[in-house]
Image: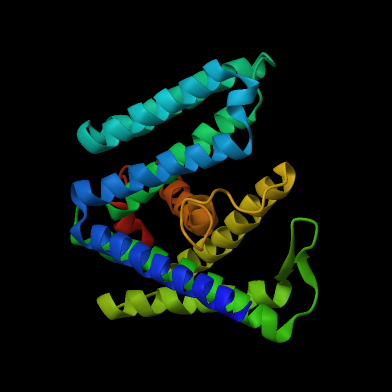
Length: 281
């Protein structure tokens, strides 16, 4: 038993190192390299979502439309015009939702397209094309990772009332608070390492992203519990699936994406980049 656990731990560590090197390398390179990673994450999320929710069993045609939509979104992200990605995504999600409104297809279908498509788009938007986007992506990574790691250790050390016992029995309020404090601190460290003046705005953004990442974790736990699965897939040795690893990250990216859109709505000066928004520049 000890030997088996040791091998599983080794496999988990090796897989984690490979993922970290791949993602950070693509983040450093930016451009097509990072867009490719973002598109791959979106496609793999849709695969896992459609498998978990059994979309093909409900409507093969609707699931095929979902795959076609994800392919179009990914291709436009990689080789098309960036300004057309969001309108294309919105149009495809609305089209996918029409059969659900007519009660011909489950809402899990458009929900999966929205979740997977926005995962790819928001990741790509935050990284952007400039050096500020690299710092912004690191900021999001650190906030999410610090939140996740400290939430686990603080929750184990302190315990106390459960955060959402029906969805994820292991999570506690102490862990959630500890993770949030850690996420904000981590975000501040990244910002202060690159900017001389760091104001309250960065704290508020880090706080919002940390909370969003924990909501994302709970959301994926709800999906898996709803359909009675332990892992989203077995694509990553020792870690389960892609959704298991990026649930908090994509929700943090969703929060940043929508906050940036909201801040620029009705303003004469649109947000120059996601990085400029995150750091209040």
